[in-house]
Length: 250
Image 1 (cartoon, one colour):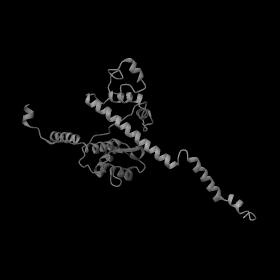
Image 2 (cartoon, rainbow, N blue to C red):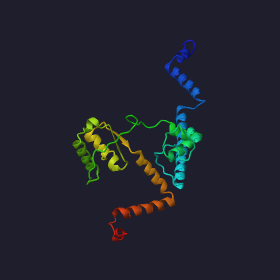
Image 3 (tube, rainbow, N blue to C red):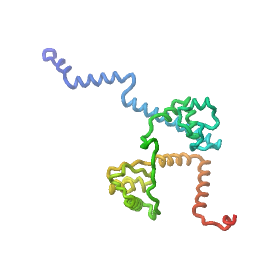
Image 4 (cartoon, rainbow, N blue to C red):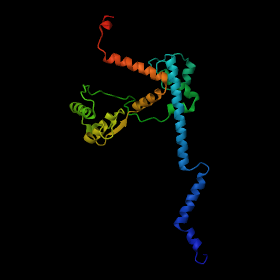
């Protein structure tokens, strides 16, 4: 081996150098773990933080419901109606006039690192002009058909009447999660991309997804099932029933 320099040639070979590099990387990863271990740990931590945050949101929502406090924001000049100036200055980092729900969450965030990071951390991109998000309704029409093709025809007609060129002006579309709107092959979003603008970005409605999650959770709570069943029956009665003489006279 020594005469033929076999060991020396092996030390200089690509396979040996590659093995040394991998061995060095392995020893360097021992204190913190491999990339796979780190990614898995970060995911576990993210799930734990999300569960903690949603539990806090549920507690605040329950508190507001029990105390008959509205979740929406208000126009009062104070941060929270019953807070004095000292507490107001402590919470001044939050957005003003956000309503009791967000302000209570902000109060949690003062002592809860996870909640604070969720409230003040990175958010989804918001496209605004001078700090304001502008929305316009083009038109309101009666939809005789509620299938994807009928909705597509109505939408194309409205855009044509308004003089809007979908191919040049449409950037993205956001629909709810039902198959008629979000179907990968025959949904409205698929028709828009195949017939109008192939590059238009489809954004799923996360509020609709959240609604599915809430419904699935409520189905496992007997009292919630009974409550929403009663509300549904009341809604059905009021929406499809013809006016009764008794109610008109009353």
